[in-house]
Length: 249
Length: 249
DNA sequence: CAGTGGTCTAGACCACCGC
DNA sequence: CGGTGGTCTAGACCACTGG
Image (tube, rainbow over all chains, first blue to last red; front, side, top):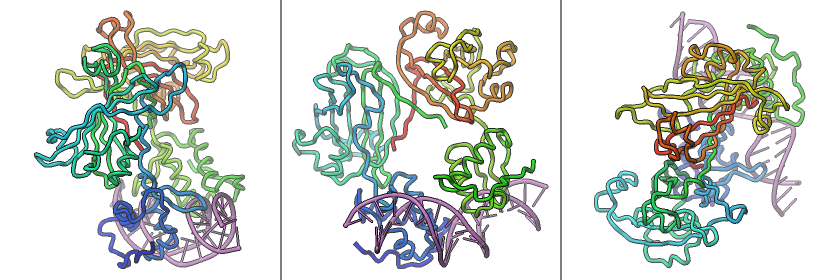
């Protein structure tokens, strides 16, 4: 799709650098869906002449978006809009041994689905108004026949409407590709808050552990391309399966 | 200190980009201590003319080292060699409430110090030979009168010789500044492997918790400027005080 | 004020990729 | 082969910092 690029030349970098302004402009075009995830954006030379700036300047703008995880360069091929988060990203916190084998992708089963008004904490995180509804899911992930992760999700409802009534059997094992497929929502990044606790009787039953068994708890806030928080998730798993590596500076 | 910079002009970027070669050259000069942590390196213009390259090229080289955490740019002032890791970095994994107050820097007490041959796992991580000795420390960190973290460290011995006999009362609360002061070792980065377990009777006593109490375990490998692993550390703390935020992509 | 890094230009040539 | 991003140059001017 050839677009008129920017009609305004030298768009007055009001307080910003020109490449910062260009990065914001490109980000807006990506967020608005002008180029879909996986697509290539126009060549640097085309962008540079379109915006009437030097090549180096457009390259700096692109570098910002690459650092932000929005774009991806591929030598000799072009610059591409990154697909969102894969989906199996919770497993990076756990190492489940399955018959002494490597862990495969866990299967997923929806235990419950309901709609209710967002609670105050949810309203704040998801930027909702009093009375706005959320879709609440309970989900169990298993490796083979062994349950390993118990999740509870809250999704803001005008946005995730297609998930309200569709058959959960068609959802597949990964939610983020589902969001993209059915709701056009791309999850771009997430914040995971880790902690430890103990299982309630109900949680323990579903995970086939004992009441008060130690568990690792991951509270996730997931954000879309525009930077809005669009998913709240709490994941519980056996604390003794928790394992994670952090890099320090 | 004015140095002859590089005498070789166009040093044949054997398989590498020129800025990659320059970055390696600058890194070597930093590791060798030509500029101490906290010092400013020469201005970009001086480096560029010294190495007979364009300004932009030296800037790319510096950008690599900045991304690596080795250098730090300060607008209008210069480019500085970063001091090593602070020292209170373990607290990023824990939130200890102290009388409903914010947590201050914890005090430190050495419980034991001894020298013994490195165990096989230590030899591998620290790149030692059979029979090489390590200095082994046990350390308790407390907030006020409340113990909160129990640590066990292994330090390769030719390198940390000055710590073998010095008075531990003079060590202060932070080890990394001590390493720098007394052994000339700068800790540049670390890898923290998080896990979960239960306290033994002895560990529990020192932390004033019960035997088998759930604990978070941090196994750290710390690296110096040259990228060599020079410290192994295991830190234990109450699992219910553990709290950490991870960013996903 | 002088010196530093930060931004920007308008070119050139190279290395990689797919056809 | 033609097109893409990757490297490199040799300038210019701006913005920030400290004395």
